[in-house]
Amino acid sequence: MFIFFLPSSDIMSANRTSMFAMTKIQSEDSQNLHDVSQKELLSHEAQCISSILENRIRLVEIATNLPAVLALNSVSGIVDKQLSRAIKEHQILINRLEALDNVKQSDGELDANVGKAHSLLMKEIKNSVRDLLRAAQAHPDAICGLGAEQRMKLGENQYMLIKGLEKFHSNVVEKLRTSLDEELRHILQKQASSSPDPEMEGLVQEEEELARHTKEIDAKITQKNDEIKHLQHSLKVNSGEELDVSLLAKKQFQSHDNLSKIKQNSIQQEIDQLNSQLNNSVLENRKVEKELQEKNDTMEKGIEYLIQLFDDEIEEKQAKLELNQMENEREEAQLKKLEKTFSALEVEYDQIQEKRRLAEEKRKEEIRELELKTKAAILIQACWRGYITRKSLKNKGKSKKPKKPKSKTNKKKL
Image (tube, rainbow, N blue to C red; front, side, top):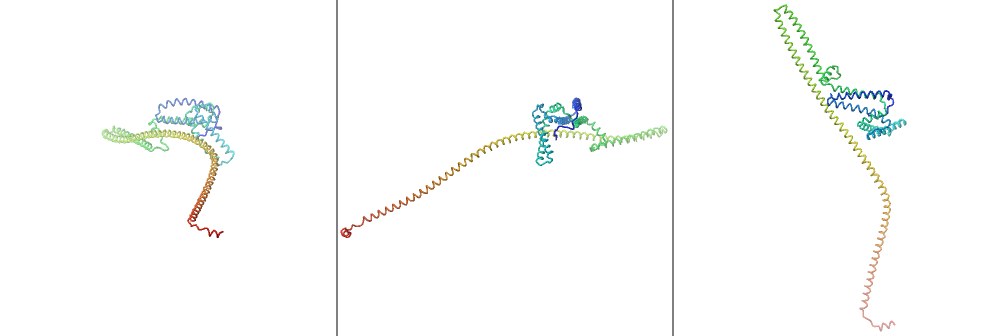
């Protein structure tokens, strides 16, 4: 993780800075010419490895130049809006972190809230550094140009780091330029290796055994030559025995020579077989390494695509969330307005219900009174009809009785 602050104790003098700059410019010019000539001699896999190392060195150079821009808070010279926005956001986070550290130092104690805020701020700074490097990688010349304009002094450690990476890159390129046979001879010469390969150990042992057998055969041949010379000398003394001894010596020498040639041929075949196995293993390893590198590149592209997709989805969801919040606030304001209207309508509704209740009670009372009046009228009518009926019957009964003479009765009454 990179957290870019302006270095204080590691700042070198202006003279050393100018010397570093001149040295760097000269080394870059010579390095570019040397790289062009070297890339023509490298294979496709070696060029991929070299380009990866160059990209990483470029990232380190960008990282060393970023503190100049962040410390001076000058992004007016950057044309790219995304890079300018990323630098401003990162500077804001750095200022917040410094303020939080000052609060922590002044309080002397780190409570839970401050610790949680510090951890969240560190996560945001990590994400900001990732976005900043991603944006700066697309425009490395802008960052390096701003660092040169502001005359930022490189620290000695930073300068040594960059020079060490460049030296490592040149060594790797030289290593990749060596052919398979040269590399094999170089490996065979290193007999005191820390952890040798089992196949290489077998090959070295076979070479040692071959050398030992060759020395033995050469010693035997030398010994036989001495014997032959001695026999030839003795043959000169004794011509009769010279022919038999010479024939015997020739036969023995021929037999030993044939055996040595057979052993040498068998050992040479084993060496050739081991060399073939080694070549096949190296080719297979390079093929596997190429496949792994391609898979790694594919995975890196996939990861970058997923990160970009994730960022886009986060931005889209953030926009939707803001719209939903605005809609929610609008609905809440409308709800408060409706609640006020509802309270007034509720009071009016209660009044209307009370009026309806009173009207209903009055109507029921009137119906009850009407029913009582109706029952009373029916009763009165029944009584009246009964009275009329009784009166009519009484009148009919009186009309049917005979009339008495009024003379005596009237007289008595009188």
